Length: 351
Image 1: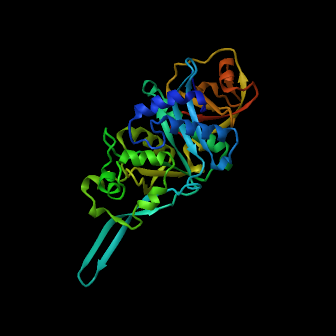
Image 2: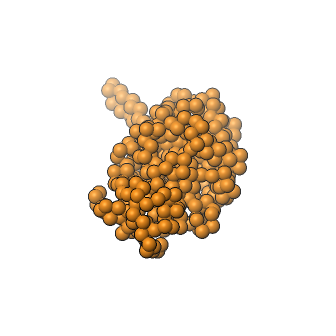
Image 3: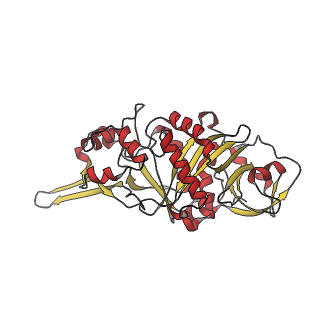
């Protein structure tokens, strides 16, 4: 059985292996043990309420209960820009006009902004290669929305994700090579690593605060602005299915797009229902396609958990679970749980 639960200290080795396999360019979870250990510690402090929940980092692991290994990770940053200034480029248009000369020119332009300050960021999604497919990526992506909905008082109404931009196998970014490298005496990977460690003050100190006219950049840089890395396309499509849309902002390093949605408009949240649990003796089959399964949340905070069960387990009055499912969720018969479809159903009223 696969189960979503809060990240644990014992997950460090598994998390490092996944980050290393992901390659360069994934800023939030770099293959750096110290950084990853620090993020796990930040998450543990958040879940144990040793820091303000609205300023916390929430990381969730996907555990294979048969082996005890963490095979996936996903996360939520409650608010960005509270301790460190949060930067993006806004893709806009500068219009120059001369009636006397009969000239009307529109020039795409990048402006340095802090527009996402105090918004909630979702990200840090990684899945072990052997577990890709079968709806596991959907589970990692959509489980966050059940937590956001359950504890929405800790989060912003605006939810966003910075998507990984275009880079090659060596981690070189066309936008960085054309723009950032002119102001930072370092490679893209090093700048990305410093940003992941929280050393972001250098951005304000060195990045130009004046508009960047795209016509001055080479075509190789212009064509990747607002585009995602090929490995990020599935994640982007999942978010688009939830109602996320490009908001005109891009990452200042690799030009990856920022997509956003308002919490109440996210599809999984709109389709979530509650049911009391009824214990049954007959086990549900494990071999059910993703489209025939639902996510079930125990509604916990420090011990938040989600599993999936066949949609047939949902009745008008209860959710029927066996003892194995109750144990995995850490609940007893009669507990009130939250339920949402794993995939996007054809109809809004899925049940």
